[in-house]
Amino acid sequence: MEVVIGVLVIWILYAVIRKSPRRWWLYFWGIAVPLTVLGAVAEPLILEPLFFKFTPLANSQPHLAERIESVVKRAGLEIPQSHMFVMNASSKLKAVNAYASGLGATKRVVVWDTSIQRMTEDEILFVFGHEMGHYVLGHVRNGILFFCGVLLFFLVSRLSHPPLDARPLGRDLVHPRRGRPCFTTRVDPAADGLRFPVHSDFKCV
Image 1 (tube, rainbow, N blue to C red):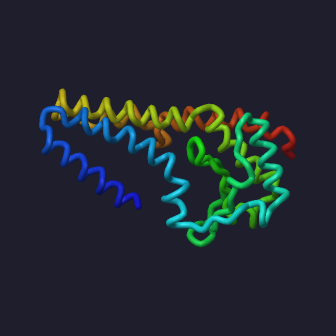
Image 2 (cartoon, one colour):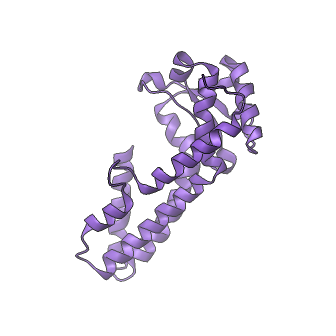
């Protein structure tokens, strides 16, 4: 899917360049921004179901669904049990996860079946509390704005300085030791800090 999206983006870029050689960067950015937002909204409804099967969490794990709903309400969010699902991650993955995805009316809770198989309910809530912290702190929105801002900066830089060396830009955006985007290294600790008050009934041993 990433390859298909990448090819589509490159096709749009070259189409815009051919259509408007002087203002291609502005038009391309104007197209990329709504597509980015649309992607965040449509991902849980269109993209994820193409690769994984989703079943209602309350049908197989009613007690876990109630506890997750309680955590969600404590964080000030509204995600009903009808928007909580189990994903058959075990068909392709071995990792564990529990998170919230989507924007607006498409917000949903997803618990991987690998998590249910290998973790206790408290451990699942521990992981989910961190991931939900990104929503409460606005990291999803900020991530979209960050990407759009970086894209505009890159396009303008390429327009103003065609032979721009990509290495200085890469050093600014990537953590020098971890190789991760600097934005990620800032938001993960913040979400960690929110996880504990959101799931206050979890006790570390």
